[in-house]
Image (spheres, rainbow, N blue to C red):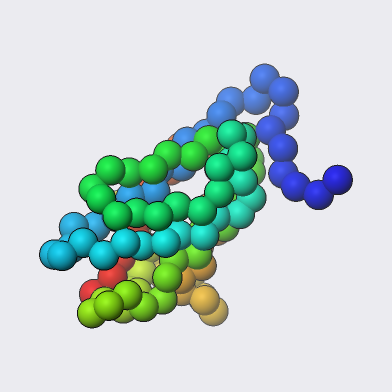
Length: 108
């Protein structure tokens, strides 16, 4: 069996995926692996409403934001308010769910 599963009775960690304010607001697609504990996957952010996902404590989650949007280019991620530019693929972010986190793809 392939995948990442929560340990029974392990705490569920929340990953909130949000977006920055833009005018007009484009839809941002964020690919997510693995599915969360509710089997939810990819995220389409088209409003100011954040999306939350639940993961077992210690799960490694990979997020991948779109590189280009109409009139916008990917710049970096904000993770818990801190700018992060992973390399070699800046759009791809890995988050280790040892605590709750917030991730925001930033475009300019």
